[in-house]
Image (cartoon, rainbow, N blue to C red):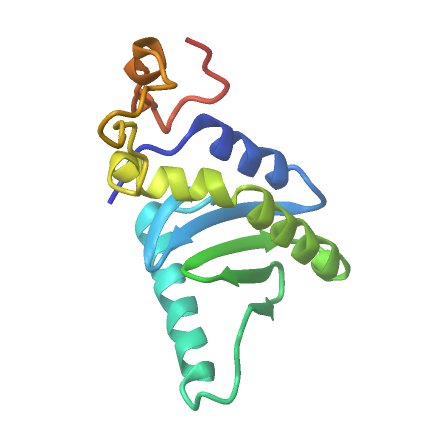
Length: 168
């Protein structure tokens, strides 16, 4: 599991946390926490992710339903969860009337950050995913690429998940 979360992803979640009356937000992949901006300890957030994942699996167990979001209202806080494949975003918010607005924000975030999340999950596998810079030429065919074009190789970024807006 990659521990390197890009600063822009964390910064985006921090900006979402300031939308409406949001108390906390968590981004999880499968049952593992990627980014937690919740006002609770990590072990409590892990329990929340496990419980919500179990609830989704329970409601989908018959195969007749596809659950893409859950909303739960409690006395002082509401929890909205949006699922996109194996990605889960859990948001705690105070005002129930903002739930549709926040649901749209989360879905927009997931659509916009899809590549960033994928890069955070597999930063070292980029060379194995078909990104090959080798020359494949027929015998007798001249090369149209210079050696300078082939020297460039993408590098894995040096990221710290606890820093945001870092420019190196």
